[in-house]
Image 1 (tube, helix red, strand yellow):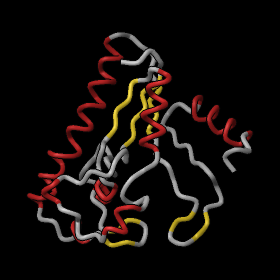
Image 2 (tube, one colour; image 1 turned 90 degrees about the horizontal axis):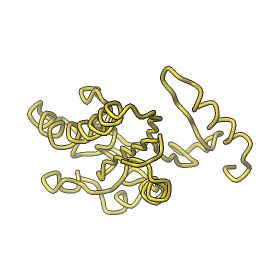
Image 3 (cartoon, one colour; image 1 turned 120 degrees about the vertical axis):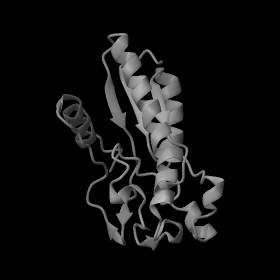
Image 4 (cartoon, helix red, strand yellow; image 1 turned 45 degrees about the vertical axis):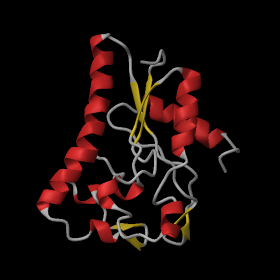
Length: 172
């Protein structure tokens, strides 16, 4: 594990589609867009190496990237990404949903849990950061913000990040 207190997780860290899912019925042109991969992958890998941070990423294609802890949430296997229908995610039988959960969601969350449990056992401070990039336009509309920061119970780190983002003209 890295020496830093940061653990960076990137749900959308690649564009590999499990072979048995084929191309999910999407044209090749869609597989090159943000719905299929995230630039966060490269930023995440290089940043974690430089800062010796612990990192966990799911090297998977975006239409299955919403790897929420509660993988039974309907949006965990989205039928639409932005405005593009994902044919391979439509009308899935419960057995197929369970297979994806076992193949994609559970191993990723087990790895995140193992990293966090290891840090707790070592009595190490941890700041968990779930990273995801966003496009400057969504569903044809330009976004007014250049970044978003979400947090759960402790706003201290999120507040520092927000202050830094507001002060930085490079992000605009």
